Image (cartoon, rainbow, N blue to C red):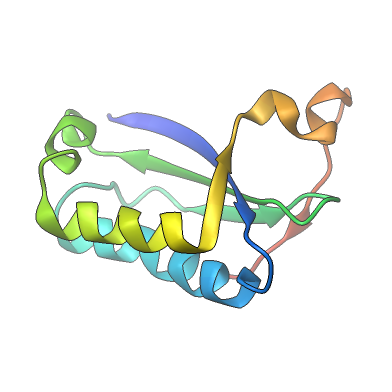
Length: 105
């Protein structure tokens, strides 16, 4: 078992389609590198258009990712199209039953 993570990305102006493309390819790329598990990935959109992704790292893979050139390059592409958002900043985080629009991966 690895670590399940939830990450939120706020697209920069005019970058939502590029962010969606990156998100659709993100976990498959991590899997090819042996860094993410086969647990199903979820992606969704908040009311404010923030993209939320849930996936599972392989055990110990997060540390490996921080030194892997392919992952570092991917994170640079993310930085060009979005800003990371702490979950508590999503308005939905204050709702008892947070609802999001599903995104097909």
